[in-house]
Length: 338
Image (tube, rainbow, N blue to C red; front, top):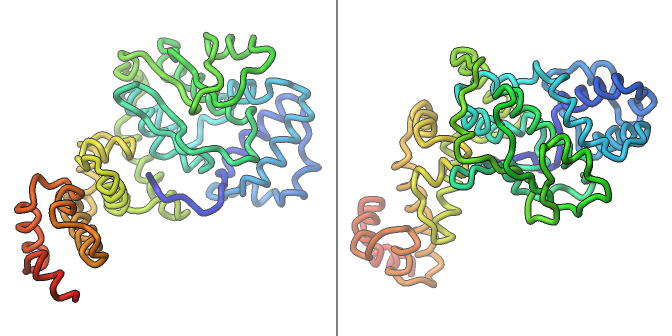
């Protein structure tokens, strides 16, 4: 996955949406601004971010004043009314299909916040938030994210798509009437992850307001914003990182698998790498080389074991590849290390 900042944070777009929602509910958060350093300049900074501990103060105060036991659900339900100009949602609206919109949501979610990493699974038609939430994030915020996503799906497809299932890690609240109303079904609680599942046909649903030209422009901007905030490495760096992790776990590091890990289609990933002047095969080759050199330096694996680790069919294939990389055989290289 992408490399995120060492501390959890949210884009200032998120507290701005919260402030708009709070105002619509008659909630006054002005006394909380000085406590978290949210002055007028900060509130108007289009590229600013807020540490999650400060955002949590704002969130908890809004929830307290609302006296609403389902504050998170109701905020998530209403948030799309206040977020139409946010770049992630604007990109989703411009995508040609629901699947591509969900891939955009996963790929650029850090522009909203890095407190969870969503991933789209093509095989199960699920969005799963794979990272654990920090302890400061409550059940209310988790429910807000899923409610906001479900309402967004409604709007993208003009109410033609509903989730098949909603998953929550936390225990079932005493009253789930609002959960059933907003999600259209009873969510599953005490699950191993937070997320939602769609039926197999839903990802192919067209988005009627799709605008490929606008989408291209917005995506270029989104990529620059992520890079500028240190939230995103280059595509080649991210690919190399994932290839290495897959190989070290004895898993197949195919283009399709790596693209899936990045919540992007294989063809789109190839296009991104081409724009950076490199191919997937070169990244795979370079990563294998680095792993092989490291294994030989450690000296605790046989040549056959290294070949298998690299996903090569046999030791002879490893010998051939290594000679191409270094000009010598693995045995000769090991001898020079002695």
